[in-house]
Image 1 (cartoon, rainbow, N blue to C red):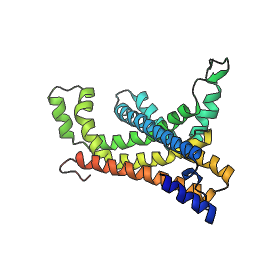
Image 2: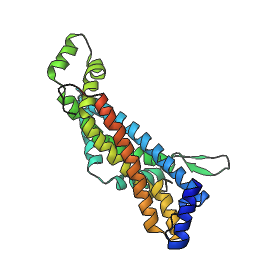
Image 3: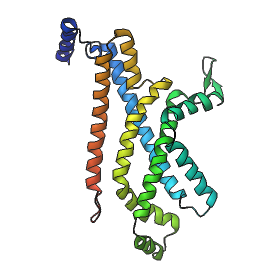
Image 4: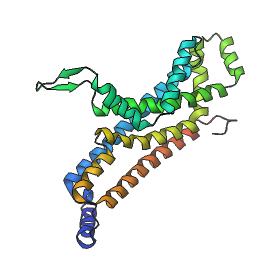
Length: 248
């Protein structure tokens, strides 16, 4: 690590190529912390969006018409409005009317912070797409399989949990991976409400060091690495869960 630090310091001193995060320990620690926060934000949003997708796909099959209409309205609203506008609506709109509490120092703080609002907004945004992805997967499950589950005595809910959804999940994997990759990239908009993720910290660094090209290059490489690792892991999962007779 010291060799790399000396190398980047030499590039800065000799050629004015300023990758300060590699030779300044404080900036390095701050950027690593930002990467960790980006990963935490991504993991939480993926988890909640998957849960929303599973629940939404189930509710779309509800026998109660108003429930189906609500799910349809949710999907249309969040699929057809910009994620940044949604984020601003939650943080600056709903956030201003949410209850507040008094902290240990006697100051009033919002019930949800900027990180929590980012998780909520991005999860709902990606969850709307996941609902449709899982719905298409459920509809692709052969009707004979559903009828066989019913003949074996499964209730609608148990048939969905133990028979339909496991098959639908495997069928939906290609579209699901694509949506999650888009979600990983979309988490960068959290900087707009002050979440100290990769892009936010990079902007703070270049505001002081005036090294915009270097920091933007580093941001792009960071996201490329995160997305590439995720795609590699999901590709292995696809091969492991492949269904004979289905093109996955």
